[in-house]
Every structure is written in C-alpha cells, then in structure tokens.
Length: 116
Image (tube, rainbow, N blue to C red; front, side, top):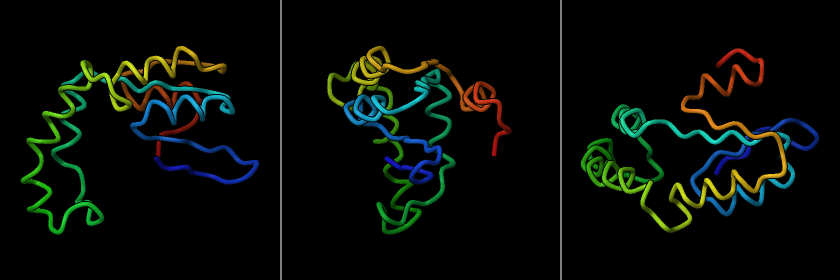
C-alpha cells in the first residue's frame, strides 16, 4: 500500500488488502473501487516494470508471471483479505462518497483532474 501526499493534503491509498481499505475509508472523502474486467487486469501485468525489491532480475520476474496471472484469476473466488469479497465489503461499508469503476480514467474524470 502506498500513501501519497502528506498531512492536511490530499492523499491516495492503493493496495490489495481489504482490511486496510476498510480502515482507511473511515477518514476518506472518496472510495474508488477499481474493479477492471479480468482481461484488462491480466494485460497490465505482463508489461510492468521490473520490481528489483521483489525479484533479483527482470528474467526472474518474467518467470513468475504465470504464477501472478493464476493468482489474479483466483481473485473473484478468494476468501482472504486479497479477494474481491473483502474489497467489496470494505467498499460497501465505507462511510464516504463511493464509486465503482473499471478503469483509472474514470477516477480522474470523477475527480475532475487530468490524468498523469
């Protein structure tokens, strides 16, 4: 999870833990549930930049891509904190303005700002 911004400034939390999303939503003004179709989610993983904090080389990362894709495919059925069920629950219980979107462009439009 990353927090962007600072004290008394807008911030964005992004991550894959349903319980953290639920806790952060208590002080949030908006909750965007980014829920793209499976095909789009999978398409974003292959071209991602090398993550040296996780993998010793770009080749090692590419070798793990099938495992990552399998994990993503299980997201709808997962019962743990990473699954769609936990995220949907956090979204539904959030006491702020909520919008479920299928792409980041919809978030920028809803906020009235230009995409980076």
